[in-house]
Length: 237
Image (cartoon, rainbow, N blue to C red; front, side, top):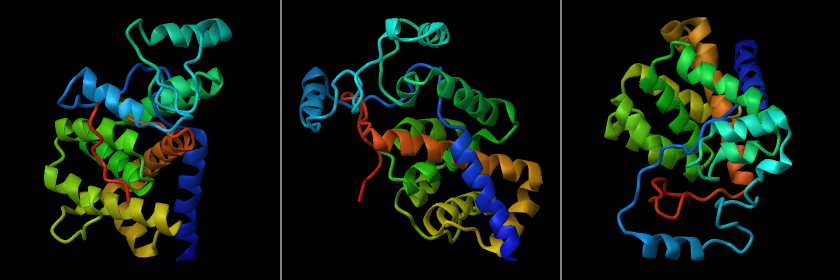
C-alpha cells in the first residue's frame, strides 16, 4: 500500500523538477477587468516597492541584448506585442530552462491527448492549492472555454467538499489536494485513479500538476502580480 503512494510522490516530485509553464509563448490569456487606465494605474501603485511595473514581479524586464543566440530566438518568438508578465519572461533569464520546460508543457497540454477540460481542471487545482493568483486568473477563463462548469470551478476555488462532483473531476481534485497538501496520495485514491485513467494518462495528469507546481513556485517566489488591467479571480487567504 505504501509503495504505491510512494510511486505517486516520485512522479509528482520529478515533474515539478522537470517542467512547467509556457516558456516561449507570449502573454498568457487573462480576462480584462472592467475599468480603464485609471483603475490599472491604481492597481499598480498599490504593489510592494520591490515590484517592477513593467513585469509585475521582482525582476526587471530582461533585455534582448543580454541574451545568447538561443535566448534571442525565444525572445523574438514571443512577438512584438508580448509583454513581460508571467512565467515565460522570467524563464528567459535562463534560456535553457525556458526551452526544456516549455517543451514538456507543450507536450502535456497540447500533444499528449489528455482531455482539455481535465487539463484545465488539473491546472486550476494546482493553482488553488499553491495559492497562485496569476495562474488561476490566467486559466479560469480557459477552463470555462474548455467546458468546465462554473460550479466545478467554485468547488476548487473555495475548497468545497466533493459530494456530487463527477468521478473523474473528483479524482483529479482529490489527487491535487492530497499530494500538494498532504504530500502523499492514499492507496485507495491511487487505485481509483489508475482504473479511471490508465497508467499512462495518470502519469501525465500527475506530471501536469507537477509542471504547474513548478510554475506556481516560480511565480510566487518572484511575487508575480496579475496585470493591472486584469481582475484577480482567486481569493487568497
